[in-house]
Length: 571
Image 1 (spheres, helix red, strand yellow):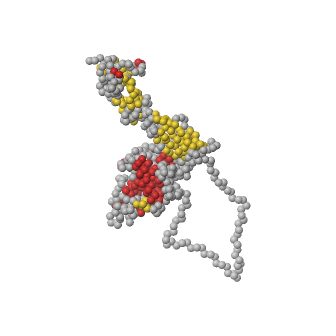
Image 2: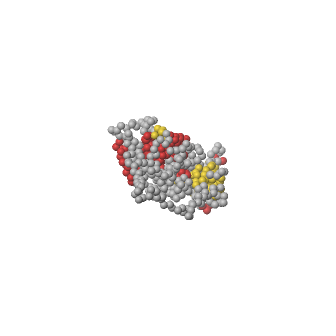
Image 3: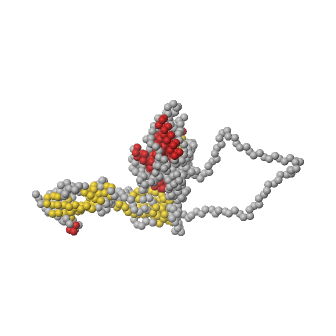
């Protein structure tokens, strides 16, 4: 049978060594290589999750993972061919419900994000590496694990240091976060990327349908096309920032693309899940065959009559019952549930199109006695036609309140279309959900700088047309500012003391139309920058008035440029 290299272990020097040995074996065997052979980063060399300058935080918080590799093939061995049949090796078998979840996630994303082209085999590779396909398909009829699959405590000891973000709602830990579920999402990432993959109205990281769809959505972030190698590698590294992890996932991805088949749920052993025990007590270690069992203790010989001892057994000493009853621990009290929400905002939410809102939507959940309600679930939902999303691209997120009862949504990113929007905050888990509507607005896009693209002197004879058209570029924070409104006005006189009122003679523009040119003259018009932030003014004509004039162009956001126009006598 094909050799299987590697074993389940904590990441670090040991796993790097085993993975390196496995890579060498792959190269020697002639197996197809899915990624360039470069040394795996050591634990000290790997960046921690969320370090500055990284494109994405790690989904798993730098959690451990399976370093098992697919079966290797080589000369001189009776290995099966590359084409794995439907009844192929155990390694290519995927539990039925898990396989169904991967395929449904691929179909859903193909409809909602066709550019991404995420293959189910990639989801299967990550699911294999993260949890061994939900511990070998140990799921209930809805696709949910019977107990949570938990990663290690992310307290900075061997892994990332991530303080609690969910009040222990997902991982049961109120001090630090832990990766959760078959696709190993840390709670704060799940709040932004969690999806309802099975249509039950819930987003559960322990449900394989929800988790698979969320993982695919996360891989598709930043407008990626996963058929492009660079995008594929960045997506996998965004899941867990390690070259060793990238190589392991790519080998399983390549393996499943060559053939995989369905096996019954729970028919595979759970290959050393990267998890805690989910609250279960570990089973005792099995006894190896052939190991002698310890001999039972021999009973003492019975006393013989006539040897001087009594024939009646001596009763064992008795311990008098305690006079003071042991202390009892009072049962834990369940806090009263939340009954209402209070808006903590300072007013209407507002941001220019394409920019981040300065204020995050925030509410406080309170009990009937108006005290803060901890661990209440609040769902934030965006409505409107502005294209605004929460950071990460979601339009619906669920946040768990902490001890102060406050639930704060992720940052809002304004869409490209100005207009009104509403952020609905809904208190979940009540008989009649309580909803607040937080008003917001996306204003017109702005520019903070406007420059002319050339320095040609703007001079023209009276009664003629200026040579060429005036071109300008608008930027915001050093980037092109598209869709920004700008007003161009011809002003009288060369001195700002002459005022900002439009001139009634001198240079002029012509508005479109079929009327005579005399009726279409204007010295003030409004334009909009194109997709690259460029602004190209119409031709500028002159009447018979000579002298020096000014052309003032101002954008939304306050970017201004003033150009000098000279009209001379005809030659």
